[in-house]
Image (cartoon, rainbow, N blue to C red; front, top):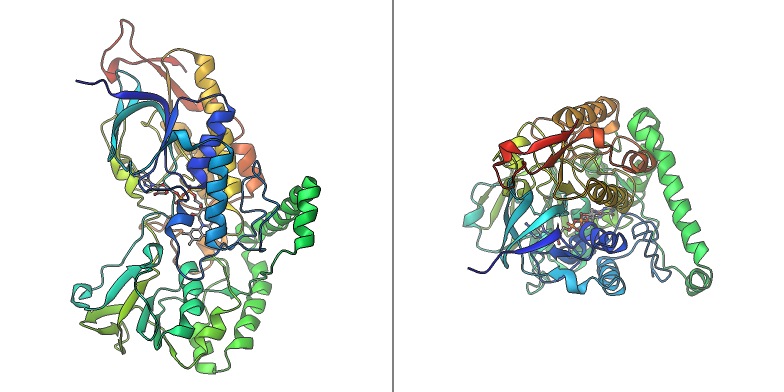
Length: 505
Ligand SMILES: Cc1cc2nc3c(=O)[nH]c(=O)nc-3n(C[C@H](O)[C@H](O)[C@H](O)COP(=O)(O)OP(=O)(O)OC[C@H]3O[C@@H](n4cnc5c(N)ncnc54)[C@H](O)[C@@H]3O)c2cc1C
């Protein structure tokens, strides 16, 4: 039988997280690694979300890698195709192609306590790795609610993250389910060409105007000629967002001022008081992600749009019945209903040292030391793990902090030498989590009076980082070996996991 391929590091996913990890590995001198990607190209979020109007909510000069500045961003807030092209460019410039394995969905990975490595089954073949970087993305697996009668619907059904470009919505009666970040971009993009648009809204979002504009040729030329101006621009965008964090985390009442601006944004476009009443949230702004759009409200005020202020309750053939009993006919249903965030599918596929899956361990809620390490899952490092999400800034900042942590993790393994693994101590994980949850108590995400995808089934916020990105950067600069068990194979070689010796307290 052919021997299973072995690599030092297996990275799962090729979005910003996976590609960033690949660049960092090469910079740390690690070349023996693969990037396992279930799709046929890189890009993650920005490959999968190609719906009309898809764009980033964070300015491009901040929503990009600090180590790969791009002076030529065409707009303040880039669209999906530009971000996807940027990631393809990063892949080429940093020589990542030889490491990429497409159509290699990770089906299962099991910790091998004898060999101190991960045995990985993928759709493209099996391999093993000393260390796994899990960068499968928090918003990567679409969630479609279990609506009674969905199977009786005779028309077209798809999720915003799996847009069917072969299906033309022109002249159709379209039902949009959900009012999150994707839905508010889709609505104005499709409203002019559909016959009728029925928006099923469970909870109205707070929507602020989007200050988008083309970046002029002169600005771009300046950024090309004087690279420090790109860094300066990024620094300013970052600083403004850092200053906002206290209001989200400690003084939610200060956000009232922003609520007034959001209400004015709505009042400018929506003249009908009954529609305005439907669209006015009854929770503190910021509790759910603040959405940015200057076109959403004007689109909702158009005569071919109906807002049903109630969730979709049932489907009877082509009739969609809202929870309030109202009915609408549709030819197509678009679900903008988000992703499996707090029950990530990859967790069901990772089997740790105790023989339990990560999903089983996380039954009471996701938790990981510094967002990276789960106890009982040695040499498994997560990118955008639990409590690393942001409500107001660029996730690339958090990804880069976790890449610093990954780099130090690898250095620590090198210093320890030989066949060795690091396993987070349960006490260190729970201590970290306790501190995170303590800080969470005062935040707008927990006190703002809403339910959101930030909270898990138990009502616990296991997704958001309750601090500044600078604080997270400091917390992830170094691996503290005191927070880990150092695991080596038992003397004499081989031996079961139980005999692995703990050599450092
Ligand atoms: C529509 C949309 C808009 C967004 N806008 C913003 C924004 O404005 N600002 C912001 O900061 N963030 C935004 N985000 C969040 C965004 O997801 C992150 O910023 C970032 O792109 C996540 O990168 P990632 O690499 O961690 O995950 P992803 O980009 O999701 O990449 C994960 C990759 O892992 C692959 N994968 C998953 N499971 C497996 C498996 N089992 N085997 C192999 N491969 C697998 C996927 O195919 C995918 O390619 C947005 C997300 C969405 C969906």
